[in-house]
Image 1: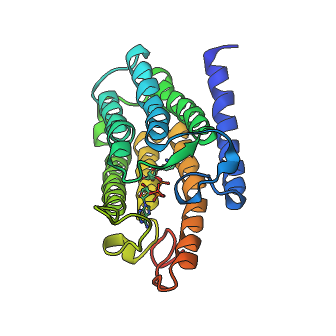
Image 2 (image 1 turned 45 degrees about the horizontal axis):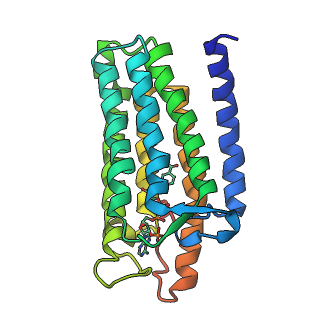
Length: 252
Ligand SMILES: NC(=O)c1ccc[n+]([C@@H]2O[C@H](COP(=O)([O-])OP(=O)(O)OC[C@H]3O[C@@H](n4cnc5c(N)ncnc54)[C@H](OP(=O)(O)O)[C@@H]3O)[C@@H](O)[C@H]2O)c1
């Protein structure tokens, strides 16, 4: 079998799996953070778990970048855009967390590693090996400009929300609290909203099936988790703002 054919099978399977994962996650909460459960077997330090899962994306994408035949300014921009996100997520974000007592099931780390390996391979190999459209003209292509702008906006929303959550635990202020201000006045999970915007922007900027698959997977992962967080907030805090939605301002 050629690599192209192998790639197409994986990509098709990947898109179908995203739908299945979405349905599954409506019934099963991914067991980390506030939804941690020790029924999922052996555990690992939470920060190490995050680092291992996300470092895979840095590594696989870098290998694809340096081994693929495609090169030029547009490819370099895609490479740097991806790495800005993933270097932060793998090597900075875990060490900013204020939950150093926390564990994560090894099963979650393992699934994260598998997801990030396949996803980075599909995106990296397509861009740097199989794609044929990203010449210098792509720089002035509206899809590229709109997509990168969405990516930047999503990144800012995600980072601001994550750091606001982390700051809720400064000093002796441990446990969970109602986040307030900014997009938290509209939705329970602006960090997830930002993440979905990031990878939607990526899908638009690359205008590619693997980019679309990543955006679909992100929504499939995070929309059910936003519902679970939202319900948890409402159950845990009787004074939780009634007008706040789960993920999409004013709508849902
Ligand atoms: N692309 C994808 O498919 C994907 C999948 C998963 C996650 N992510 C991204 O990874 C990042 C982390 O995800 P996550 O699921 O861990 O997010 P999260 O549940 O919102 O938690 C983020 C951090 O804030 C803390 N925290 C959350 N709410 C809090 C509150 N009300 N009071 C005090 N502390 C609070 C959490 O502590 P605890 O850990 O102790 O709960 C955790 O350290 C997000 O940016 C998310 O978008 C992306």
